[in-house]
Image (cartoon, rainbow, N blue to C red):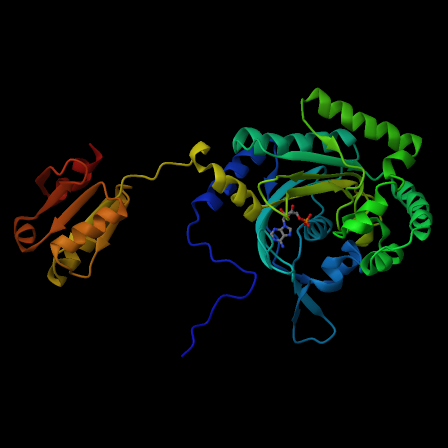
Length: 416
Ligand code: AMP
């Protein structure tokens, strides 16, 4: 019979050390900045994303995993991103603002898999809902920059920022850009569609010919209103003040429709083609798009955990990974000793000593080899003799020294 393989574009995490390291470091970091953890469901109504991300974005038009819920009217989907669900949760629960929250979890997008791009991937999402101050953007970017640089010790990345202005600025600029693109000949088919549906996305085109044509395109930051110009300046001044290194990328638009004002991306040349490991921005009207009468100006960011792992795997020696606790391995030489082995293991677990039990009754030699592979600090051998004397043969795997220890004294002997 043929074996069943994992679904294309998904990954099994067999070694989770790095994954949990990132999660734990982020938890500590976020709490320092007074962000609270939340969880939202993996399934949501499709409508949530259609309304917020924009029907013509790649995510909605071709990357959604749909689930038929039994009710033909109501299609559910596996969430492709975390911001719209967080805003939905905010509007349902109405917590006090500014609501500063973060979450971890899998996201699903039907993309062509490649290095750093999967159909199920994991993000850390953080959002600040209900704050219009542009200084909040500077604070969030600082939180992220300090996380990557100070906590994780990553040096080789660049922070790119752009300012999309207000929705009015964006609409006005869209007209100017359209006029420019209408005057071009030779844009690709994708760009021809984007020109009408979602023109800012032309800047994301991978076609070198298109990219060349767009080098002379008018930029958003040249067409900001006076008020937006002031905010943009303020953001840059605050980032300078906080010694955050960044570059302005006037062609950074990000894929989703809901952004206004600040957009940013952290990119690394250690990642290959999919070089962004974190992205975010402001979305002042998202709440209204979800039906809220009140305005809740907000901003958020998402960190791609797999891409962060790809970077960290290249500098494992620099990471302060938690040291594993010493491991004690109880060896039951035959099935006769298994009940005793279970009791002893229970007493070691109660004393918070990391303990495993070998219960398959191999030869002592092969069990010792196994304990060695497991990195055991001590082998604790239980045979007929030990069972009768109520003792254990404790062998220090580093020094090779061994000693008979009374079973009742074992936890305190190992804790010494
Ligand atoms: P986005 O929600 O598209 O702004 O993505 C935020 C971050 O999630 C990106 O910077 C990536 O690090 C990560 N990401 C997005 N799509 C994928 C994917 N298909 N596979 C792995 N990581 C992804």
